[in-house]
Length: 155
Image (cartoon, rainbow, N blue to C red; front, top):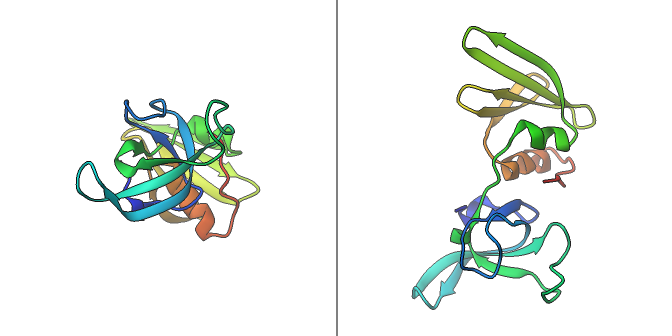
């Protein structure tokens, strides 16, 4: 689950719950966020989102966004494969003793993402300065938006 206050319009997320109208692990883009939406079943306020299929709308559905409770969505874990798919190139690979890390660089964006294999940790760097550690694709999107860069990423 992602809290509504941790989301932005355009974030890419996945469905994490079986039983809703969408398939588990289906990938969607957030197009609307409500931090307080009344859930009549639970009789309390919950966060909700509106989502659009990143691969185009489902042919069997209407042409409007899907609505889901925030508890039914999950972040997409960042991976070296996702970085490469989005234009980051492996610049360095270091292995010293039990420590191993990769440095991915995006030439157009000027950003490095360092991946530490032990602990499965990622961190974003700009001009050699660490911006922050990140775990998820939507967190990378937030960094790109904050820097005024294109955050339209592929999954």
